Image 1 (cartoon, rainbow, N blue to C red):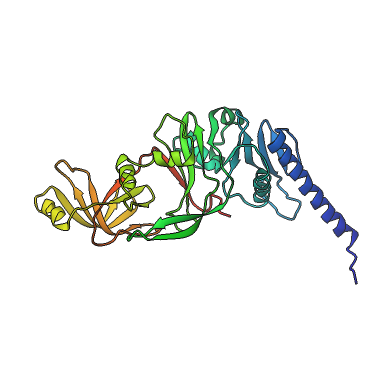
Image 2: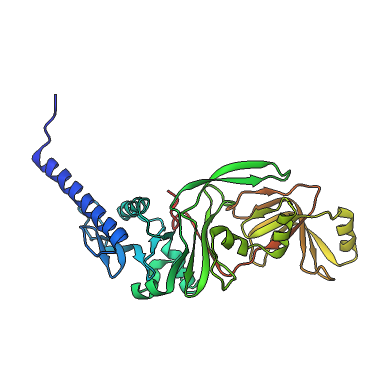
Length: 339
């Protein structure tokens, strides 16, 4: 037997459906036509799509104060900069509607946490969009989508272990893309060496040439010695910004240089002045033509557990080198979207 709903409950559901349709229409018109409009809880103002939540939200949620959260901006080249930060509910629902609409749109876009844009804009001084929101007019003029995103997705990443054997796992990409911020280029991507679903990074590229593809941008981060090793077919390992290149150096050669005072041997050596990547065994050259070179074997791990451990093996020593990058901004799970 069919149960009849009370009229006030029916009317409440009807109002909720109407609001959802309003939001959907405003979002789709903004994405596909660039038109302005306003729904109950979303609006488009001067090229910015905004989720607007009042002090008392009608679905029973109560907020201390009203808030407006940017969802997407239409840039001067007609591409879209989409906020990929982790948002609270109900903003998160509006964000999902934007991402869904983009799946069926030909408009080029980049899904990037606006926190990252704020960090790049202020040279790292501010890493929270809410603390230093960029005026829409400036954002539209000085930010551009160089290599568009293909949307949020999970991808299968192939990696090699210390023996060169291939293994695969799934990593969330957050719509990997390349953007320009104030005439500098940044790779927006998820580092597959991060634990869990990966670690989001927004990395400045040392180049004055716009990358043509995502792979082109990734290659900009590789030092020449890494590119040459990969060209030879070497099994180069990576953890975060550090590469480990296999060499043919013998332990006796390295230890002889240690005895001569050219290098020092260290266990649990942390890379970088304020770094968090730790080598189980390391030989660091302090003098001579190899000054500054670091060789390692054993396990490469992150001291704060943010990256998967990398087993470099205990027989062959590897040359450890840093990537080529400018500023890099990482976001934790509370700021980057990993749904």
